[in-house]
Length: 333
Image (cartoon, rainbow, N blue to C red; front, side):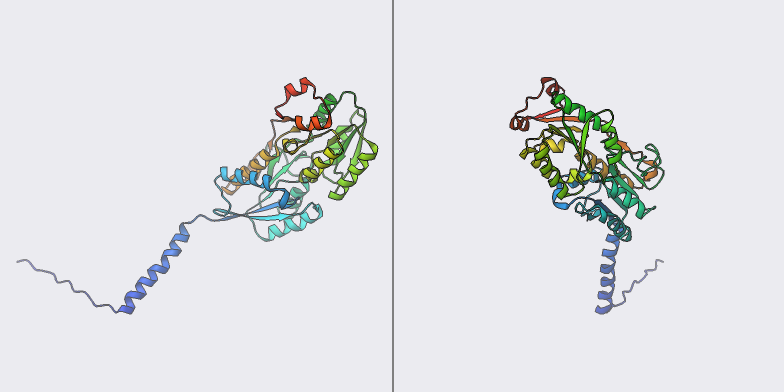
């Protein structure tokens, strides 16, 4: 004999149904948030100003994107601009540490990286510098940085004498060569020493926007035959100001990266600043994924481009030697 089991449903009040549904609805956003990846906060410490840095910041973001990070989606960036007042960098670095950012990026002048390193021994720091990171005290060695700091070396100091040689080749009869240097920069002493070795050159210091103007006003009186602009953060941030002055005074000059020639500079030799900023973004992404700066070797520039702006040469009335044009990686016509 088969027994049938009776199933009875207990009536539930409307309030109880709504309470049950409400609890489930409230749990849905919590579950969704639990599935979302964490948003990392990057501290971007830069010596220059926002309005003159857009192309380089875009290059940094591109590197982040290559590593799988997108601003406004899975990373936020806290920008700190010193506006070409390097004495503000220590306070800005301390502010980022107080903000508890996941990583500090200092792709401008060496002083920014040194300020960040002085502010924290635990938060990862990714730098970009043209000087020797070991000699500057940023890392223990290039292959094994050994601390919370690593980054990109533009090799600007090592290519300074090469730029001076190219300037001699461009103007073989010239005698009066001048170097514009930011003598307050951490890399200046060694750079000037290497450029002076066995050569007769004049060093003119310019440590601020105003002093750049003063230096070129002086050039109008002393009339140097050729100018080498040292590769330092202040000058990179003020490259349009400097190129404008050089063009106004028809002063042949060589600069350290192609970005100068692209805005009207006569000639440049060095690694691309845009690519270096991109690489700092890539390294930042790797650190956000869990790699430690101590284990990431300092990236050293290995490709250096010679760029000649023929339009500027024509304005200056300079005939570029065919041998120099033949060696150029890019000729802007």
